[in-house]
Image (tube, helix red, strand yellow):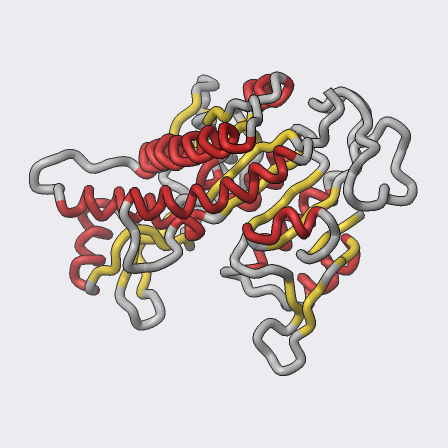
Length: 342
């Protein structure tokens, strides 16, 4: 198999286009739109692994759990991640199945409920920062801290929220299963919500933890370990900009790895929006070229952008792309989007 491999990261918020339309059917309609654009990438000959966010969907599960607390058990955060991987994966599978039928493509899509290992001693466990769940008043929040051991923080004058750790991903537990599916030509949906965070205990067993892994960082790790040729981060903007929304804003068509590192260090990319996406692309490219023997089985020679200078024979050339869903196909032709290259 010589088709190139792309990891496409889709944001969880992309399933909720209108805050007033958040039902499962509304989310599915949004999924159909996103998968239609990704199907164009697949039809062009790419092997695709789709990753996705799940922030709003986990929030819905937690809110239901809060409302039903007088009658039903609560849902642990790692189980919330598993639930949303299955539900969003089902939406994507169904949307892709129908789109493949429309296009006459003989392809299958499958979801892998994916565990991602983090280190037990990750410093993030001592400094929880990721807000989850509903807003609360101060007394309710402090009661949860006392009774349930929650970490809670006031959120910019909007109320109090629970915060959990956001540790760094170190291992995709189901990596080999994902590779085998890719080799079979299956479109894989994996690492949803950054993966279900697990740690390894003293006996070597995996144990779920109350944490949230950044989905862009997990996507970059997956893309590096496959290894993939392309990390495509689908977001709300067509291109990346310097001085975003400022009078001197500049849209970027292309950055080298060194330029991306420089702009990131200078603080051009907001921590809560574009920052993690740029950092994920940097991590993926910093992982470097891999020797021959990737999942694609041979060197890709039909990549849509130039081969990087100095790449070793038999190496997988890595490049990253950031754009919005409607422009994925145009971006792959070099007509838009922001490319980040070695």
